[in-house]
View (spheres, rainbow, N blue to C red):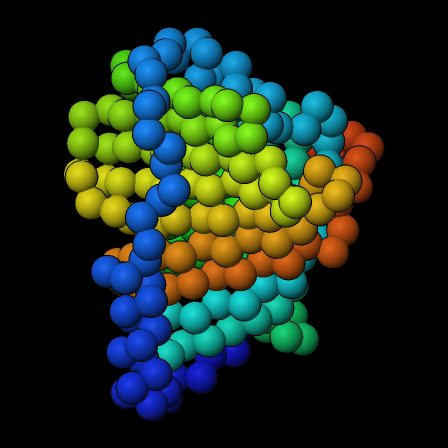
Length: 236
């Protein structure tokens, strides 16, 4: 990716504020009731596609230092929870790739760039319009009224909250707290076909923002085994 390192101080401060303390609270409805982890897992399973999918997207990234970048990417998704993720800046500069299974990356190249784009795996999946089931041992709460569905999965001081709204522009919101502190939020909007149209990840500390615009989401045939393999290092 190509980054521009200089940014006026005022703009940087405003961006840090937008990504930090002034991020509005998640619109979690009142009246959540206890639910079972099994019910939470069934709901999460209902959000994922039943067949292989291939998604292509454009992205824009900004961080607290004024670094900006953009480019295109590709996601190859094999149910239930395997993803090959690729992203590159203009003219193919700064390629990053990862193989994600569930809530972990089996490999990432280069690892630091992938961590910058994907700070948390429930948030990564939420950017694809998919929820993750509660971790073993989680306490679960739920709300649903036909228009809004909300889930809260808590394990110790770590919490994942989801809000799915079925309005004129359906959307999935996901927010993660680690050690009791807000980490980041995702807002994914869906098109008339029910597929993700755009997604925004806002990381609170350190402040950063990643925007995805999906321009292709199609059913895919079986993927070749080699796409799941770590890329070979470039020849020197």
